[in-house]
Image (cartoon, rainbow, N blue to C red):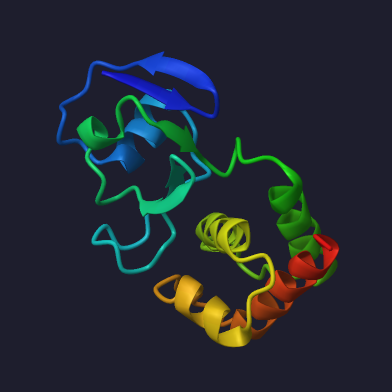
Length: 150
């Protein structure tokens, strides 16, 4: 199975039904995408597939083959830089476990809606669970990143 991850092609010998999360972590060696719940409810495993956020714990490798996959290690561009800068500036992270999924979801939101209202943020980030409850700082960081984008 061929996966294009962060611009690099990987030829993996894995079962087609294997969750993309485990292919990324165990076979590609990219561990920034986290395992949280395993049933698509927490958002720790969010990656981008062809620019759209996807729960990698629910995505079979076979459905990602031939598509562009971006993980937290390889996400780049103006929006990604703005989100990462805002996250650091506002000290969003506490434990950090959920942050790769939060950041990937925030980037996807701002790519589609550069000037989101609070309701847009809550809708886009719904299902990204933060046990430390940094939701106020996450929302503020998304607004800050949005303002950096002009």
